[in-house]
Image (cartoon, rainbow, N blue to C red):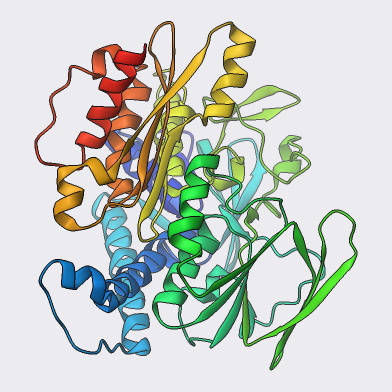
Length: 476
């Protein structure tokens, strides 16, 4: 008999915790998962899943309303109508299904689900405060997967009705005639796609000097041309929303982001605050084992996902997901969970963040993996090699031409000397599906010299990357 109640206790049943639990059972570990709120965490309940349901439905509306595009394919249709409550219900039903599937998968694998607020009580001990008070459980290893919450900057008042975060936006309870979106990252971009497709006017406010600052500059420039300018979207850059007050109307005081000088005051029907997310790392009991959060509130970990105390790993304590601040993506959390379990089982592994892809599910989509060209050049200067890039265009791809979806490019960044693939950035139809091939190649540190000889089916969108590798081979 083990001296512990469990081999592994996981605090947090989001995608990271769920992925870790499934792998732990596969590896023969007696596992429990602690959750105080909804099974599935942010991704399933308030993030990836409902937002993609909204994007799917609103994307169909946008497609059917594009009479010029349809006419080019020989299709004529009448007026397009949609029902907001039904679209909202589609997202809600999908959440319920996936949350149920996730819960059932844990039950089927005999993972114990402990309801309540979990935190570290001591080495090998977890305290869970539930409806029946506090109970202490013991485990050989403890994994923290607390996730994240929306960041609300100072000066912004949230009433969850007229001023709200993505947590409320995914419920699509209203379609404001005029909505302001604070932030132009992937969350702001995706919701601008939803709202404009369903007839809303959008004002996008970005505090930095350029829109979509997290994307490769060339991709961001194309995204502005195809996702912003043709749509009913007004934009501000280098502008800070100093104060936002809920009401009817919502009042937004705009100032210059650098000088803080007043610019103007907007009055809109609603405001979505899409300024990123912060770790949900309060009240986890980390002080009991001497762990200090970093200045942004993230749990310090190494690439084995061991929690660090003064730079050194604490035995048997692990953390994965948004709370680590490495890559705030659901699939990154799941991957981290698997790596952590492997290390728990004595099979030493580290995570390769460069090979983890990301995507914005706009119409058209944006995806990327690895380094931007500027990041690659900086690394090249540091390590003593030169970097080059090549681009291919959807307008030259047979499948894209057949679909009548020719906006966008694929950009490949690589080392000149070895040809090693360093980064790939795509904007265009099915970009989120195309990026995985590049992610796999980066994970294996493949060279464009080798990739150029891989054979792709014709006619397919995957030939966008095939052509790019071949161009890189010629240039190199």
